[in-house]
Image 1 (cartoon, helix red, strand yellow):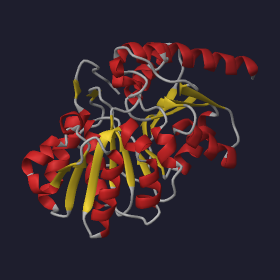
Image 2 (cartoon, helix red, strand yellow; image 1 turned 180 degrees about the horizontal axis):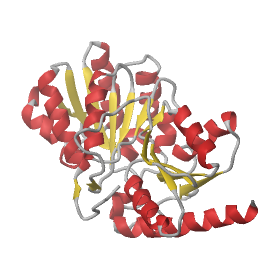
Image 3 (tube, one colour; image 1 turned 30 degrees about the vertical axis):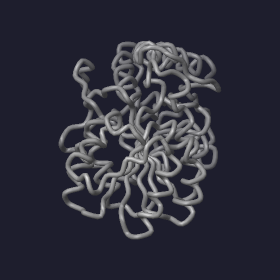
Image 4 (cartoon, helix red, strand yellow; image 1 turned 90 degrees about the horizontal axis):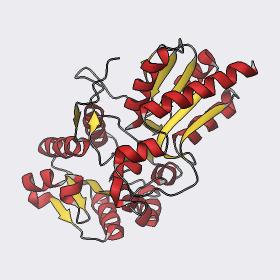
Length: 320
């Protein structure tokens, strides 16, 4: 797959535009924000449907509880804030007021991962996926580009039940075209390969694809699997790819504890016990810096991934 990394678009804007579009179709959709409508791009919905938009101020717990109340009356609330606040500050309300009674609330966490950049550790959600996938009744999705995000938001408006959707602050490179169709039950094998299976999602998908292209020069064939849905995980695709290559790696803009890496490890441990290398943020907080600098520092950019994957592969080959 040919990737032009110089062509990128705002995934937050794609979210906001799609939300406004589905608002025209379904009058039950309401949107709540926590004083961040411009940053989350829910402002696009607010401008179009001011009577169905509620700015709850810097009171995320109240926002989540209000959404639960609206859902109990048949509305379809979409609530949005930075991922750190949308999941961390509101955990109790999400667990007990939304997921336990199975209310139809969609939680959008923007500014996920280290690519939040200069705002630093306090704003860089590295454990949000772990928090959300641990709650019963919750669906967890991490779209990789604008097209996938649009499809996910449309699906969310039709899906009955709690859902967490995580998108980044930074612009994302286009990967999928107009023919892409989101399937809640399926991971996507973006590139076929025979030597290594790399499971990834979100912003790191493009970095993995670029690394895979470089690794071809060393005759290393990488199977790249996009896993937008972390819960419920497409277990069969994970197992099939692991059996095929017998060498699995996970790459994520999240802690290696509790996120995609953990989900893949749990799946393989119970179905096809095998070694999995996890690439992500280790047991530490983020820090302030430009997004691209932080991707490099934490080893998530294409250049560093190429080196790391090559080293891991050679190590495995030596142990055969």
